[in-house]
Image 1 (cartoon, rainbow, N blue to C red):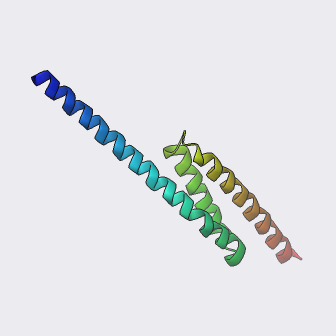
Image 2: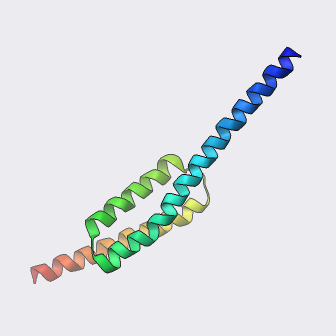
Image 3: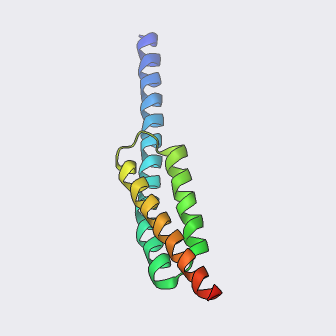
Length: 100
């Protein structure tokens, strides 16, 4: 009877830890999802390439460190790579215009 109680307690503790991990991953996913339109705006409208590149790197680091194995992150990573490429192209174009 005491062993059953301890096993149940252990199972509940594991469930609590797993739930906390899942909640944390969902929060990280929400941050990444909310960051994408902000990045697009920084690149397209504001032309704030330094901030955009920094946010892209932070988002990629978050995915690499905390969201490995989450399938939807493959799509987010691809979008971040596209945004990084677009940002780099626009930055190079802007630099060339300043040289001319």
